[in-house]
Image (tube, rainbow, N blue to C red; front, top):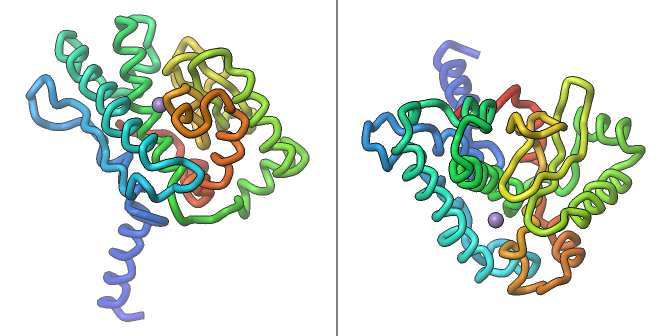
Length: 244
Ligand code: MN
């Protein structure tokens, strides 16, 4: 490989790292803090990156549209409005989650709602691997016995969320764990007993499934597994932390 080829492949490598599997992988960089001092423009809603009907028939277009353009957009707007009132509004979201009890509950709810959906849109994305491979596959099998056992345990955890919340697969110093949070809390917040790096998550607020599945959360969860983009899960698994 000559120098020119090396440079070219190196640049492609950077692009692949940022944008591999789909444009959605850019969502974390895209939701970085804005350098603008405009107080109401601190965080931006990343593009969904695919059409509202891209996950049909598992997740219907109308639900995706309302979820993204109403719910997620509102969390984003409210987070920015709340942060604009605070003297330490320039803290990173990760720092805020680390010290979430020092913030108004509206920052906790909207900050979580903003960030959790940023991740979730990438996890339920068209295309990508239908199963984990490599190190993640091995660790899931070692931790839970088999991939099917893992899925069952994760689904059970999601079924067990009373009211609105999320189920998560997190990476911790002592291995992979399944956990659940209420409302828009997440495993990065200091309030959680089980804290770690979220690599797979499912939104079990009724707004995520009620139009199509009404009260049938289990059917929604079965559909969820059909649209998990395991390339993205593996990409999160390889990360040390989120930066924003
Ligand atoms: Mn939601």
